[in-house]
Amino acid sequence: MGSRREFITKASGVVAGAGLVLAQTQSPAAAQQPLPEGRFKLDEVRARGKLIVGVTSEAPPFGFIDDKGELTGFDIEVARLIAKAVFGDENKIELFKQGFAARWPNAQNGTVDFGIMVTTVYADRALQVAFTRPYIESGIVVVVKKDSPIRTVADLNKPEYTVAHLTAPVQEERGKRFYPNAKFLTFDAISSQFNAVKLGRATAAQLDAPVALYYAKDNPDIRILDEWLTDVTGNAIFLRPDDFKWWLFLDTIVAEMLGGSLWSPYKGLYQKWFGVEPRRARAIQTTNKG
Amino acid sequence: MDYFAQTIVLLAGLFPKLVAGFVTTLALALAAMPLALAFGLLLLLPRMEKRAVFVIPTVSFIELMRNTPLLLQVYLIYFGLPLLGLYPSEFACGVLGIAALHGTSPTETYRGAIESISQRQWDAARGIGMGRLKAFRHVILPQALLRILGPLGNQLIILIKDTSLVSAIGVMELTMTGKMAIERSAASAEIFVAIALFYLVLTTTVGGALRLIEHRTAGRY
Image: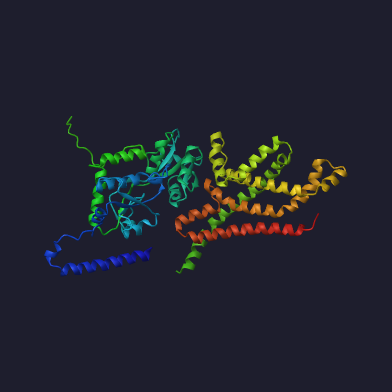
């Protein structure tokens, strides 16, 4: 990975250098001329008449195959909202299923216009791709049964309690930090973790916040602790890092979804998948002085 | 550091964890094996009955266990029993699932072996005054057991390999330990090969031991 990153850095350096030479040789008037059609992804997408979006089919409720065999989920529907913003038609979209490892090269080389697949923003990732602002907040939460005596994470720190983890070692590390005296039980599927809590096999489980909301929506006997195990992280749309016009467009759409002109459809999607209202990024200025 | 040295360092660091996983796998197999063999014998009596009232439920149960995936059975036991208010440990559920599946397959093997013992053996045993049960225990079963050493050995080796499925219900056995290590190091091929070697040691030991017994007892009876 390191060597590939170095290569990309060097290659982009060469390209940028060449651009600099060109810019210096061009007259100021020539620089003012409009850019050729199709040079930016936005122009390419509009000329093509549909979006090509990289998604996952393996992460409910974000992207998965439903009972009817169709690809659906929160991420998929946000992508459709963007298609509607570009073309006025949410069906002008091609959903390109890709593995989690393939998402980076596919975004960089333009196989997909952008990717939207439960992707957390991290600094090292931002060196490789461009991110819009997050369209959903995430983080790790603890779920327990509704009638459980557990109120805080600290309550779990007793030998008589069992916490269900996923095979991800980071979950075990959090466990050792926050409730070292509890017993750990490790599963290789999120559904098993959830079932373990529901059936009383485990006292609690570590889940991604939106996934926990999704399960809690259909299972009223489940409660999410108010205290989170991690800081709030963000899932964002990612795209090639060198296309400002395309990035600006997508970021604007996301900004509008989070509290502007696209707030209503976005809020509708959020409620449909997670059962609660999202936190609105822009508050309404109250005109009532009383 | 070159690739080879890097892999050695990685695996050496993981070794204590893998051994701990291996011990759990061994414990699963050792607990499930006698249970499976006993379970098979237990089912043998109703299976060899002539009356339909015994045979039909026994055969139905055997077919149900033999023809559904072990993973499904393990899930069903682990997540199903709590609905009845029972909470056996992950380990116990795993052993139960493995023993139930691998106990039903030998029943058919036992039956075949017993039926292959000549009727004259029965007649002779009865002729010297043995009862039915005594004849079975002292004359028929010992001969039949020798005949099934081969197939039984195969069954035990499959049983050992099937213990890996119990990782699905959170038993930290060898495969699960490896999966955890892979999530951290992303060295899937190297770790899976190392795990395979652990299984290979166990299965070849068991297979070799059984072959030795077979060899030693060849020609008896």
